[in-house]
Each structure stands twice: as C-alpha cells, then as structure tokens.
Image: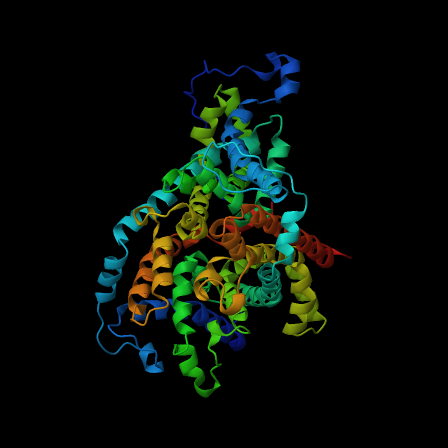
Length: 318
Length: 276
C-alpha cells in the first residue's frame, strides 16, 4: 500500500450539509450509530445479500422439508410439510450415494495434492533468484481461465487416441482415462488441482512473507539442511494459511459441476464421476424435483461445514 | 530465506511452469492445425497453419454475439461491484453505524457457503418466480456484488490514516465528498485488483448462465462453447480444431488482462484481503 501524502483541498465547500455529531441528539446516535450515513451506503449491499444469499438459503431449507414443485409464476398451490421425506428419498438414491462417495474420492486426492504442491512451489518461488514474475504468472494462468476452455484441451489430451496415450504407448489404460470408471474421478481431481493451484500458491506466498527469517537462520546454525528447515520452520510457520487452503479447496470440491459435466459427458460411465451438484441439477431441474435437490444441497452444506470444522480442529490444535 | 541459485529449485520451478503452460500451448497449436494430429509429432506444428478452425467455430456458434453477451454479463457485474462495493467497503471501514459488525460477519459467512448450493432456490426465484430467464438481469443478479471485492475495498480503506479523514472533516467536507475526493483516489490499486478478481467470476462462469439462458442468442461464450462441445462429443466428425479455436477466444481476454495487470494480482495485494 503506497502512503502518498494528500493535501486536503482548502477550497472545499464549508457550508456542507454535515451536522457536527455532538449537536445530534444522543438517542438518535444510540439508535443509528455515530454516522448513520454508513447505513445508507451499505444498504444496497445488505439488500443484495438478503435477496441473493439469505433468502435462498432459507428457501432451500424450506423446500427440503416440503413437497415442492415448479409452478407457473404467481400460482397458489399447497406445499405440504413432509418432514424428512426428501432427505430419505435423496439418501436412499444410489445415484446420490455414488455422487457423495465420488466427492470424497475427489477430496482425498485433490486436497493433499493441492496443499503439498502449492506449498512446495510457493517456497521454491519465494527463494527464486530470477524470473519470479514470469513463473508466478504462468502458475496462475489456469486459475484465471474459464473451466470450459481448458476442459476442452484436457478432453483431447486424455481422449483414447490423445497425446497422453500416445506418449504412454502400450501403458495407456483401457478403457481410456475419461471413460474408465476407476480413472475418471482421479483425472478430474488432478485437473482441478492443476487449475486451482496458482491461487493457492499466491496464498502461500503471502503467508511465507510473515515467517520470521531469524527462524531459518537459527535452523541453519543448528545444522538443519534445506529439507529439515522446510519441515520444521516453513510448514508450522504457514499453518493458518494451510487451514485456509484446505477449507477453500474443500469448498471448491463441493462445488464441482463443470468438470464432470463436460470432461466425462454428464457424469461419466455409470455415474462414476457425477458430483453432488451435478446430481442436484439432474434431479432438481431436469427431473423436476427441486425439493429433493434442495435436500441434497443442505446435506452437502452440512458436510462442508463439518469438514471445515474438523480441519480447523486438526490443523490448529496445540 | 536467501535468494540463491540452486539447481533442484530451478528444475522444479521450470517443470512446474511447463506443466501449467503446456495445455495452453496445445490449445493454440490445436486451434491452428487443419487436421487433428494426435501423434507426438503433432506437438510441433510443421504443416498447414490455418485460421480455418476459427471460421468454422464462428459458423456453429455466433462468436460476436456470444462475446457481447459475456461482455454485458461481466460488465454489469463489475459495474455493480465497483459502485455498490466501494460504498459498502467504505462504510464498513470508516463509518460507525448500527449493524456494522453484523454486516461484516455476514460478508465473511457468504464466502464460506458454496454459491452453487444455492442454485436450486435461486433458479426457482429468478427463473420461475421473477421470470428473468433469458435476460441479462437474471444472469447478473446472483453475481452483482462480489463479496471478495467488498472485502478488498474495506481492507484498503481501513489502511488509510485516520488523520486524513479528521483533517477533511475539520475543513467541513461531507462524508461523500471525503469518499470521492480523498479516499477513492488513494485506493486506486485496490480498484484494479478488485476488478480483476471480479472479472474472472462471470466471464468464466458456466453453471448459472447455463441454467438461465436457453436461447442461443442470449448465451455467454462459456455456455455456447460448452453446448457445442456437449453436442458434438458423440459424433464422429472432427470438431477438435473448432472447439480449441473457441477455447482460445474464450481464454484470451482473461489471460491477456491478467498478464497485462499482473502487478495488481500479487500475493501482497491478495494477502491484505486474506489476512484480514
């Protein structure tokens, strides 16, 4: 942040509309705060959050406990309370069960890979002598590019006669990567790791700036090699950033839609790479059961929150 | 850590860069080849560089109309984020009003709950209840104010010295005038960072505009290209070059922006937003 000095314009309008705060009645101040103008400035954002975030969140919970279906705008219909029926329907559906297992498989591959690669590359980049700008930009180029655009390239690289199989020759898996029910999800997990890594490298780079240099000096005086000082100084030093990276990567994983939809043509062989959001789309919008889809969404949010809390507890204890 | 030249580190960094950049190289090469060459030799373009694929994708997907739609969608979000986000960020950072703490907590909460989990209720509201299907308004609404950008604005306004504001108030400047003439010029770098971060949301978004737009003439490029990929994936024709040409057109603006303004997308700019 630059600290430019600013000369306050002496010609400002002195007859401005502001009333000095001390002249305002104390009761109004307690009611609206010292600068009620803040309410007016923040109002559009508050309305936005209420309309696009709070209300839909409430509606999702409401839908998941009622028999809800699409109607013409303005039509008044009964939407009876059905208790946990939608949750039972969702959880007993094999496609839904499969999609939750898929996202677990995704997270098990994606999250550790993301944390390790992002931290290693960020530390390497942090110590690099030259070319830092070029490297940094090349790392985040996938992150800023549309999934749809890079999915197309991966689709061709991993197709049965694609360049990856050409390179592997006889080692190429059969059936090929994206149509192989055991390999489709791992390919998607690696794709997402590749695409998001640049952003997490930036987060780690920021965190690395706050690890005290004296600790590295102390470690090297004690005779620690590079690997030891990485494990004993860097890893604990960036622990808060690791918590953040794990939580953000988990949220990204829970949001997975575009990649299974396009890479594996709508969920892959026998739903082997369908994600919960993809199943939500199929159930809610294609098959017209928004209530069951909302229940899947609520289960997923609870799952994400639970994983985040466990991560926090595991990574930040002691 | 000392900035030293060590070979393992250089090798690691260069391999990393190659892995990140290779698919982009392959995208451009593939989009320029007349015939699909999947062999290893096809990695080096030796024959027949052509723009035919770009003409072909333009035949299947109206590129100009799709780019205009992407532009309106993205532009609308950036405009709303800058105008309302700056106001909200300024209020959250510098004005004492009732409910400020709750609003700040709500803003943080928004970033934790995954947006795509709200798609079903948002679809019911915006498409079914408000009848905003196939409209720019319907596309823009859920993205209108980017909370990360509001957060960045708040952090930058918070970093300005209080004396500046006190001096301006003594001189009789109103709060809006202080915001416009004093605070805003000082946070110009934050403005660029916030615009960059906001840009990649709607420009790259697929799921939401895919749900909202059914008419091809309203679809942003990410959606029309995805529909084309989905439609031709099963056919035996050779649409690869055309798809990759479309991918280049979709990727180019975002990559160009982030390369040109890379100074404003660094760990220190983001760090101020992340560390709180």
